[in-house]
Length: 352
Image 1 (cartoon, rainbow, N blue to C red):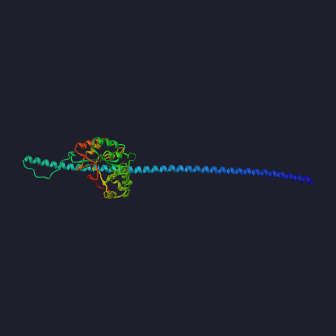
Image 2 (spheres, rainbow, N blue to C red):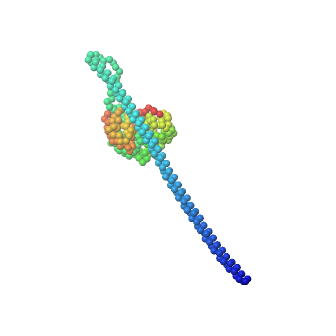
Image 3 (spheres, helix red, strand yellow):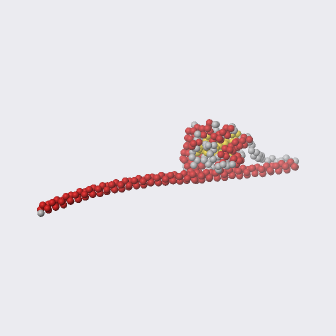
């Protein structure tokens, strides 16, 4: 009996050992599965985080591009608003000049009619007419004694070579008030080499930037001065304010800045020039050349005629009108010159 019990106990021990071995194997397998699942979860989580990071990066990039476009559109809107105001001021100024000239002409006609009436009356009565103050004759488009200074703002542009060709063909010179025109800046050297004058207008032509402060204006002026020097070797001290000294746009950004600048630029050795004849091409693009020519025939009394035109890609009709404008001034006996520090200044009234 004891032998049987011993055998039975040994059988149980073997069986229990086998069960323990199987249990250990299952435990190892289960542990391996847990590890594998953990690794899979980590990999999936890592990939998920990478994807989220990538998406966030792409989102930030798109949002940055949208913000940049918004800035560009805002700047363009402000520039268009400034240009519209400038053109409106230019039209108003031209209309006011025409109104004054018309009134002056009417006064002269009235005075001449009085003189003619007196002369007829005294002739009929055979008596000597009384002494009367001298009366200026009516304008007869006589340009003798007048000097025309053709000026072009906002260049150089793709139109610059054609303008230079026309000037050379007609034996006259002009003055180019230039800005930083990027890829067209190399035409600045052609302007100087052809005997025309180069002067300073603006680097940016962005009123908000230029007229933000006195310092901002001089930063812009120094920038365009350096561009001109780099391209031509010329240091010009002849300038024209963006919008002219009479512009009111600057008031929106800095009250009183023009009153300060017209004084300080001269204290700093610069000579600024406005204009007293406008072609009218500042009022829009593709203005009919007949209108531009007619505007240039509106001549003030001054012996100095500074004519405003523009040299930009959008001013094709200005180029078309130029030969006839030159021909007109020649036909009435005008001389032509380039603007220098010694040129009699033409200054507008200040509006800021």
